[in-house]
Length: 179
Ligand code: IMP
Ligand code: MG
Image 1 (spheres, rainbow, N blue to C red):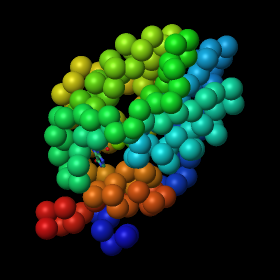
Image 2: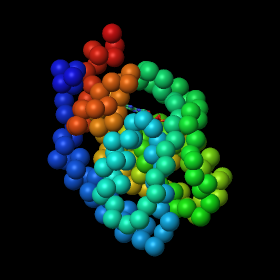
Image 3: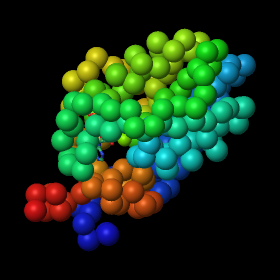
Image 4: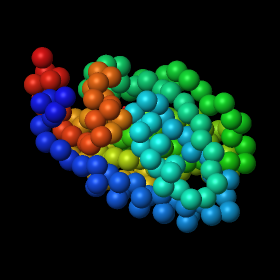
């Protein structure tokens, strides 16, 4: 897989430092609250697994799946709920855990939908932010790192369902998706 990677943006050590920092902030901010971390499958699974272990206050987790990208590299703008949450959200302080905030179309739709279900609060924690590409009016509350407008893979992020298992974050070679 390494041969498909143009360059490494964040290595394992850098990722660990970023996630530990986010975990500390969230642990402080959610002290005494009713934290429910909601992970958006599948890209954020690796981040979620690390982030929850960097948090030292009680929390619950749940998962949902939406599709916006299909197998390509450009957003379709269509958000479909593939798997919904199991937990009733009333009274919970929701933290949506995402892999990457790109156009923001997916997350702004999701946030509105979840807010309508009556939780105590809704915030967004994204591992990566691509601010240059923002289309929807959405500001993440916690950001691990900002990345340039390039297609990145690894640490859960995929291209055509591949590369999710890379332990680092890298820029995918253009030749891989232009063939
Ligand atoms: P948005 O609605 O455009 O913000 O779409 C966000 C989703 O697109 C993410 O959850 C990813 O699944 C996918 N995505 C956006 N940019 C990248 C990237 O650089 N690499 C891998 N997936 C990406
Ligand atoms: Mg995703």
